[in-house]
Image (cartoon, rainbow, N blue to C red; front, side, top):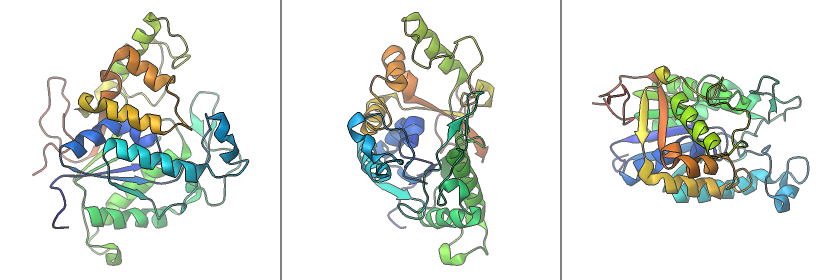
Length: 305
């Protein structure tokens, strides 16, 4: 890859929209800086809840064509972020959205009925091999995916974590599947995170503004769900507030999944660009670079030779 950018980021996400929610501003920032950004999406999100009444016929229990529609949504979102390298793990339609249901304690668990081709049922090595090929082609220095719980327990998020972490190991093995490309060791791996202090601050401002429905049930001073990360576990914060409008545009592209009067936009309207323009990460592999006054890296590529 003689024309490849010097710095290359690979993100592995479960469904269309996950990437824009978690790291949309960072993606836009790095694209603007001339860094390489590659997104791999593991499923087309066929089991997603449809928020647009006139598109309800696309649902899995009706025409089952939501995945194709979300294929268009993610293309629009990537255009908003400036990302030109988007892949589907194993090709579009290789793995199906597994669906989920809510546990009584407030986190996601596998649904009672799961499609035969669901990502949750994927053979780990076969799925990882699809990603190994991408890793060896793109040669990213940095990989971003979910933590071991997938943030909130969704089976596809957990599987994406497993596939990404395993593929990163396999891709570096000198003797492994050389038909998939030359071995490549990813220098730094991060798990996306949500800052507890920032979340509490945002919730407090929402409640003080009189908004009691956004993130309903969450108390600024009470226990928070597992998707929120204690600040002491954070490793990096990327300030991409200059690109928050691109992130919001990407979120708007997902009309079947995200409403403009929903929690993401409500928090942004009340808290400002810091709500979604500063994105947080936990380091899972690699050497941290220089830290700011809060003890966090400000660039995922920091510390690389």
